[in-house]
Amino acid sequence: MQFVPGTNRGDVLIHRSANNDPNTHALECCGNFDRTKAVACPLRSGGCTVHDGRTLHYAGPNRTDIPRWAYIVAFDLPPKRRAGTRQFGWNDEKHSADMARRRVWLVRGGLFVHAWRMLRNGVLNNPSRMKYLMRRAWQTLVKSRVARTAQSDIAGQDQGGLPVKCQEVVSG
Image (cartoon, rainbow, N blue to C red; front, side):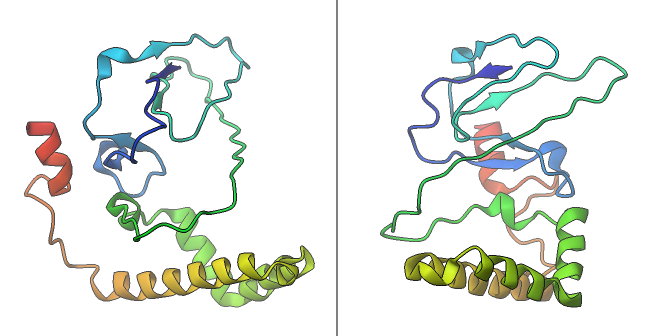
């Protein structure tokens, strides 16, 4: 693994889908950062690392015939209110098969299962958490509606398919 120290402290840098394929979950950073500051941290097979999720990190290509598996455990603090909203355009383009399956599951009744699990886990006991989740659900519904109506719109991309912001960084 390689890490770029200190990248977790600043603003979130611009990313894009790996290989410009929005069907993958992987992201690559195309923001402005000093690549020469990357620190190699070799891991043995079966090894692990603990790092801040916002720290830029990279695992080189798998050169074996054995699949490489990752088990990710994320810990987070309660959200803090910000002055404005943040937009991460690279996430808006994601239409992975997993997300499509989840959407179908939710529409076919999974929404009630999901709601029951949340209620069972005490979401109603925490009004601020409930408000946060309701706001997120509303934003997701609005985004999915906008995405469905604008699927054919490729505004904001150049001829090569790169988001304009990324191309400015890459070519600049």
